[in-house]
Image 1 (tube, rainbow, N blue to C red):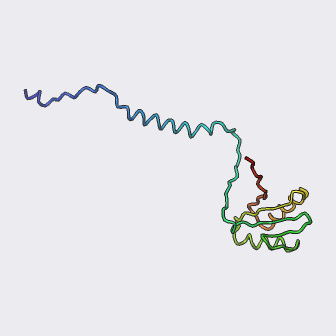
Image 2 (image 1 turned 180 degrees about the vertical axis):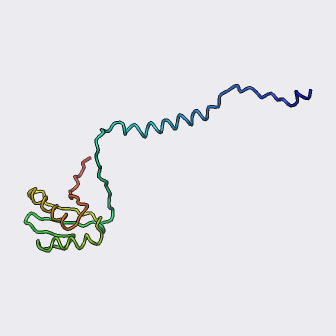
Image 3 (image 1 turned 90 degrees about the vertical axis):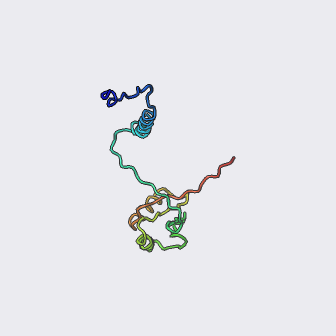
Length: 138
């Protein structure tokens, strides 16, 4: 009798605990969802640009080029000779400032490319071309 009191029989497990199985399935599903977009891209070494949106108008510099060749930085009309130095002075304050080029659509393409080159010489890193947003009729 002493021996029977020492040995206890364990209860038989009649069911399977389903919670760990569900946890494992959810983890596998998340891994699949994360890795599946990576499988659809080509295996070419490409360095993608990083985009940043600057909401504050104080950090943007607007460069306007009129069809008659006049230049303006923000609201100040500048001379051709002073353009690079004036723009460089503004960019030195914050090198990551976004420079928005506003060029008339009737201006030749060469004017835009020359303006981009001049902005880069002034030290601009982030250059964007300003557009007028189309109105959606609904």
